[in-house]
Image 1: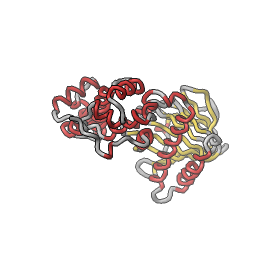
Image 2: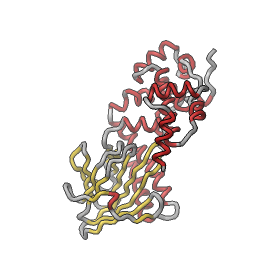
Image 3: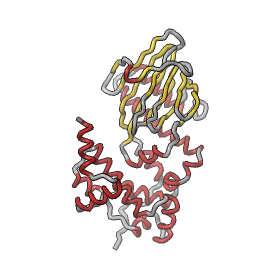
Image 4: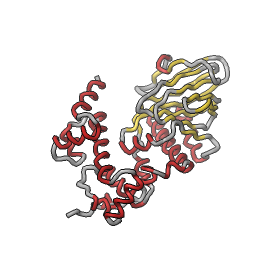
Length: 320
């Protein structure tokens, strides 16, 4: 018989909030730029990364593949969530040097300062490239448009955070890198919330399902405990619905049946744990609900097209 879920898996009050909570970033790099015109920097494509820019002083232009050049002023925030290459320049169409070809002053392992001295108008920027490890966070980021813009006047509630970020970047007191990273966390979450409030596409599909009280509760339970021996009956109980009504509504909102989603989710979690955390295959298998390593390996290859051992080998080779 199916047993009811434990209290920590009862219907979530805010399943979407849990997905946003998963947006804990691991920094690839963060930099403060002090520039006087003319200047320009070409940000290279960074697969699997989201890049953000905050103007702290003066103005500059951002050129992205999906939109015309756009002016950024103090208090503006832009997120390039899919790691597409783009340019930051003092004037549209100006020359831009490749980011990693520029001399940089490293203040710590992942924080650096760029300086451009063209002698003209001054501009200050805080920029960063970040990764998201949690599968729920990655899925949410994948749904975002190519560029997210938040102008200073659009979201007054962001300005205090932006001002704090700018102050920390200028002063870089002890612990400043950690503060800048945490503030960037907040800014990205706020930018996504602003997009969700304005864009109707954010209320459909997987995001829409997270915002449904019943189906969102089931999704949150799967995300929290993929190893649990879930069945259609126990997931329906978590959603406080009958089995038939739950099955139909889950498929309608999410786009796939509940048990298929569970299987896919387990494989996404397993891939993350193998590729980025160096987990041992037996432990990873058990962590997503498989008692047999052989059964796990078959399911993994069926869903992802590659064996778990190959994922581990690639990860180790990349780390060398």
